[in-house]
Image 1 (spheres, rainbow, N blue to C red):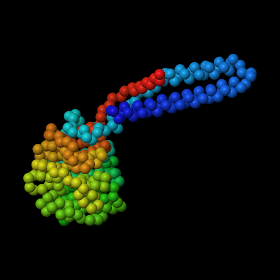
Image 2 (cartoon, rainbow, N blue to C red):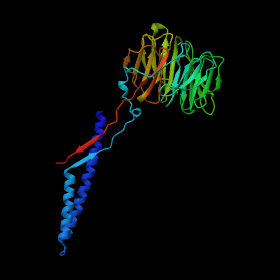
Image 3 (cartoon, rainbow, N blue to C red):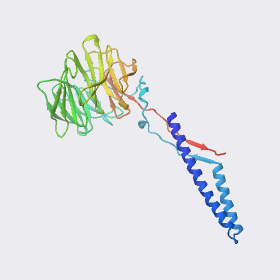
Length: 358
């Protein structure tokens, strides 16, 4: 609010100065006219009166300046709340119930979120209204991500990788594995990253276009140690966010890795979070992250340099989370999905600024 007021003040000051400079230029022109008339012998009273009238008008304008601005309409979807103020989340009235056998997978793009709602994949709009759906042909489903380059969702289970066109809701199988079991998927503009189930998880790196081709397999201990496993991974701004769990103490950590070398930039410990549901992560604005844990339900807000900003313990049992555009969070919580609006709701108002020069 303070920054907005400062911006408005700065704009009005600029407009006022422009106005005054314009009137000073007019006065200078009138001064020149007076000097020219003084040198002319046949100058009339009419000439003098005209100049005097112009000077009086300019004086009135300068002595009383008032700027009236038309109503400023602000779209709440364009105003994003400061990321430091995300938690605790306010209560949400927008939710959709899911069936008991639904898998806790979801992914969003700018306008929609794709979820598993047994026995279908459902495309929801920003109000969580089902606008399209298609049957899911397999028993299990592991993860979903969105590819802005393909303009498609990527859907996986332990053995298959599918591409889903949201316009037609047609699933196209594009990759099969008989040797490993996939658990998570994420993608950049040029690559797909798939992580495997179990201890000592691997990460497979594939090209995205023009076709899906294996580039590299990252193995333990580069990915994680032999007694750890990858619970989640997300690509964001040339980095990979990894949730890595370990057998001892039900502990996990969230790490930020280079997407090209898997070198760790920073790591933050998350205690007592391991459960039957995976701990999931979601990239936010300004390179920050949200991590949700089902066990001892908590939502963690993590800074861009790996510091814990805040923790929300009032949540129920979050098991997954994703962004829809830049201002909506979809949170999978106790067999329902609800929305968290990150916008500051600012009502439309009339903004009037008045400046008086004494």
